[in-house]
Amino acid sequence: MTRNIKSEQEASDWYDKGRVFHDQEKYEEAIECYDKAIQIEPEDIESWSDKGLSLFNLKKYEESITCFDKSIQIDPEYLYAWNSKGLSLNMLEKYEESIECYDKAIPMDPEDAYAWNGKGNSLFGLEKYEEAIECYDKSIQIDPEYSEALYHKGNVLKELERHEESITCYDKAIQINSETDAWTNKGTALTELHRHEEAIACYHKAIQIDPENVNALFNKGNALKFLGRVEESQQCLDKVKELEEKE
Figure (cartoon, rainbow, N blue to C red):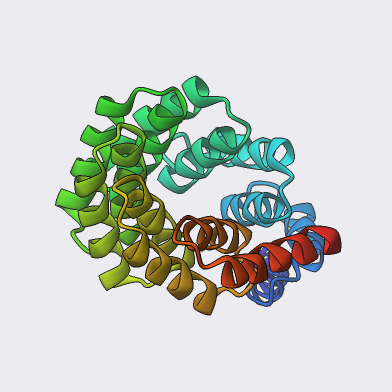
């Protein structure tokens, strides 16, 4: 009994150390710690799932799925693992399989805004835009402050060329969380409506947040060129070229 308690504590210590490394974005080191914990406690569901998360952040999506599958094998009702597996499959563009995961997760907790948003993203990947909007709406209904769902809904509306509606979504997302991508995509929607000055202001804001946002720089350059502001346009496009050469 004493040895079991000692082993459990040792596994817990390795897990906690892994969490610290993960929070520091030292994912390789985190994985090493989770592996130590799993070696001691092979059924440690949190070590398996958090190892999967670290692998996901390293863009090792197939390996992350293996970890999430192990978590699900230990506990088929483990909501976090179903959602995380769904996200990994989405990144691999395996949208149908991703939706199956979210369809497992949602009945476990119908009020999980994250799962509805994830399902919406996979439906978007399949170009099932109206169904995607329904999922985003459900996510936003559950959590009106969920900026990601608002942003993603904006992207679908933009794809459907419902630009005014997409701008409304981006504005709500920005109000909650002022992110560079939302500003960039709002600028794109404004460009489609030929509101170039407003679009430039959005691209400028996106670049302030992330000076290496190539899309915002490129789009700003094109919008400036359209307005005949050739010198300013060229400065943006030169910056794009500089950043692309760095990669």
